[in-house]
Length: 172
Image (spheres, rainbow, N blue to C red):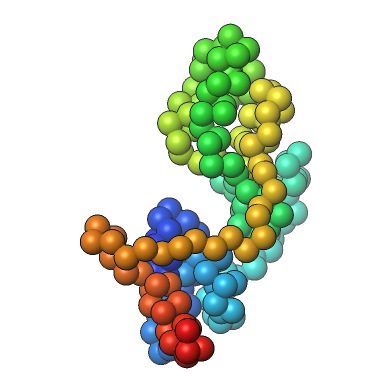
């Protein structure tokens, strides 16, 4: 997990790409917005196991591999108030964090971290939805745009510079 040098997003999956003779770390969303394709050499090598291993029920075939990356699915995203939604649904059922962890077959610290605002894995999100009967994944709005306001406490990002250059080229 890294920091996108274009939009400034922290703790996101990034790729090292070359843009305008500079190597930068870019998140998947910025790569799509800017139309950047990572070079073949930057893509992780596809490895095939030498001996076939039995696959787990999740279909990922082994330890250490977590659920699907949320960036791949473009139709839905984790709602912004997921932590408070989980906490209130748990409290409505009259469960403490330990009881919810037991019902989900997860550790208590997973519940604590999630209710504290740390994003859980997709597999844990599915468990929360199923056990608590709530909807955490919502439909993604079509091409969200945000207004960048220049403030003294926020430095200008590469995306700000990119958007400014685009406007100047269009003559806006």
